[in-house]
Picture (tube, rainbow, N blue to C red):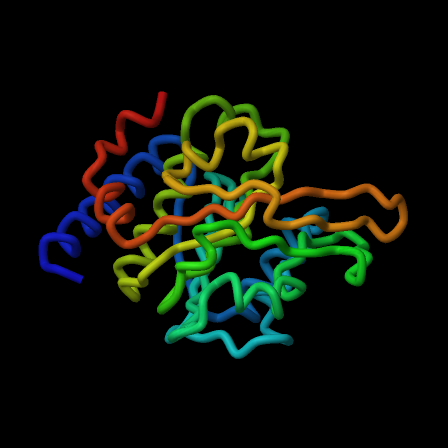
Length: 235
């Protein structure tokens, strides 16, 4: 990561912290995922901890993962995100997810894993190297003070910037439900690339199919994102 990118990243992170505070959200980060699991269980029971960030399933520490928590003036948890580093080396993301997509299920949903499937798009066939997986994105529902302010878009970019500063990955990627992606939220979070139809999760009880997009940025996209005036995103 160049000195210029580090400087831009530091400025970006500082500005987002200021914006979040102005909206009544106080951000902090951590790498102890046992602590994060307790936070989620206490404040986000309706949206349980996702498997990719479950410390009972993965060895997560400061070398390969971090979480972001936002609290309000009453010290209540109102926002979460988490990022995890994956080193695919010469394996493509398409190859990796062909064997491992079941490790990234939507939380709290009973799934028919045998019926569910992953379909690689063209971008996934060329993505390889050090990847940062971005997930656990949650903003407390029912609190109108955060809705329509643009803060969700700013926070999504914040996690990517933090990953860039920590690891300078080749790519950042994540998954997004089709219904949310169709609303343009991937673009609002700063993601330049999206591949529809990547995931088809079959609900074990109803048989309904939940479709998901693969969203991603490569390093050049991240550098460009850091140069964008983030203040323009918020009301």
